[in-house]
Length: 118
Image 1 (cartoon, one colour):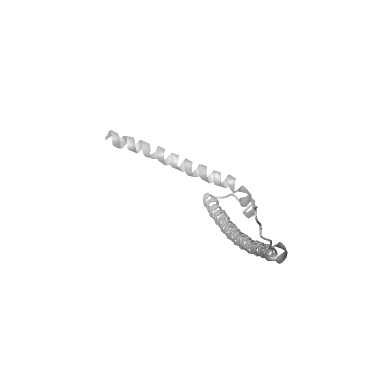
Image 2 (cartoon, rainbow, N blue to C red):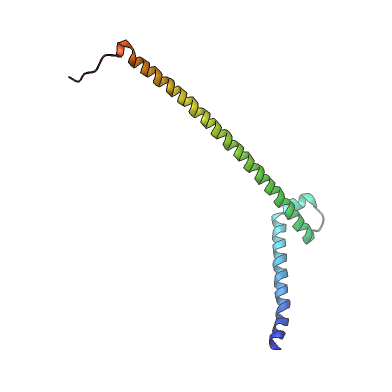
């Protein structure tokens, strides 16, 4: 019977602590989102449900912005790597033509004397 009595006393205390945590978190959300609240409802008193709904809207908008930024960054990276590949190909073709010119000059009759170390 004493354990039952103890649990009966403890239950309201646990419930009170739980409500305090919820209220504290809602107040923190309200302070974080205060500029958003002022835009939406400058003169009205906000209920907890209003704060939670606004939080969901702001988080969804931030998530969409994040996804758009990721897509944009991916596109930039693709363009950059494509541009890098084009530059590499251009550099390679310039290098190739330089090597070909150098080889042709070496084969010309003026430069074709045999080198002998003795």
